[in-house]
Image 1 (cartoon, rainbow, N blue to C red):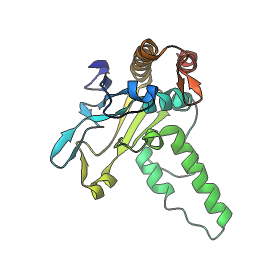
Image 2: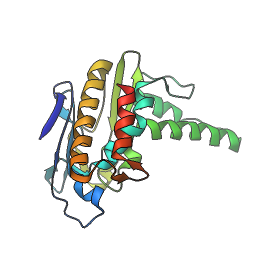
Image 3: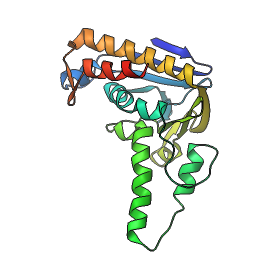
Amino acid sequence: MNMFGNMKKFAIEYQFLPSPYEEEEVLQNSWGIFRLWVAGYDICEYTINDDKKPYEWNLIHIVEWLCNNLEFILGYDPFPLPVQGDNILELIQESDKFESEEDDELYLWYQAKNSWLFRHSWFSSRAGSMLASVYFRRNRNYIEVAWNNNFFEDKQIFFTNPKGSYAVPKADFKKTIFDFLDNILSNLETKLGRDAKIGDQSITGLQKKVSMLK
């Protein structure tokens, strides 16, 4: 396994594995195990049918989402709605209480919320997998990592650490994320070539996005 960071604080671990499916080249070559360590817990680990599992899927979905959204996580993109909360989970909970008799106000409120979540949570890029619902946002010189996966319990899927929030020093977060992305993109480039397409982007294009934020 390739590990980046300090697993007692914040770390990423991954390993490519042979894909069990016949898929297009990029998906097939990015299949593997992914662990996100926060305060000593792999928050992507879950149990189903009494079998504890790491997250295993096409890792390119996580990689692409991070490359496209790091500028919002590291930059100045605060939660857009006028609610109070000590962490992301509380902000989301408070924003969900909003009511209005005006349809346009309801639309604008929840559109603002959902647009922000799309930029700050990779859950929309899970591609049908059991990817943990994790949020990232900058709070001064820290990056808050928050997660809430209790809703999976309705499907008899139980995450080892289902809910929490943790502040990672921004410098530590950046080093871990960039080391991970540099390594996995380099490995994908070796496998597929620098011009391999990931959606409408190339590996080289994703590498350029990452390098601009270092």
